[in-house]
Length: 109
Image 1 (cartoon, one colour):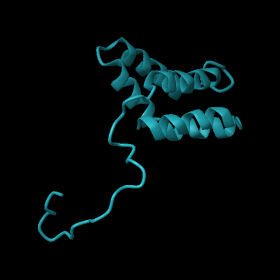
Image 2 (cartoon, rainbow, N blue to C red; image 1 turned 90 degrees about the vertical axis):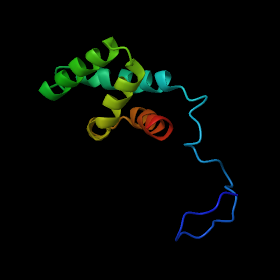
Image 3 (cartoon, rainbow, N blue to C red; image 1 turned 90 degrees about the horizontal axis):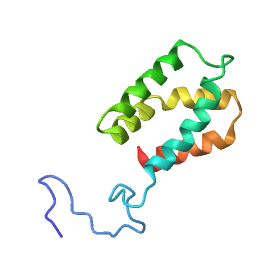
Image 4 (tube, rainbow, N blue to C red; image 1 turned 180 degrees about the vertical axis):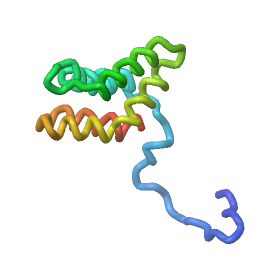
């Protein structure tokens, strides 16, 4: 076992379950993003729910998708808009969209 940093006690235990941040291997980033975006577009493309905020979001998403690092940029954009998506999905009482968003948050952010 590595020596603890000065002033910190040594921790003598094993993790019962691996920390989810040890690896991202096997996580379907694209699939998770695709599911959440499908839910989101269903609302923000509808004039009854769309607005200037979501129009700007769509423009930024298109720019992210056109870049070289599309997964990182798109993922970052989704991450920075989680609270707005939660509000929209809750307002629509869309439990499936909320569940898919939670999966995206827990596995990818």
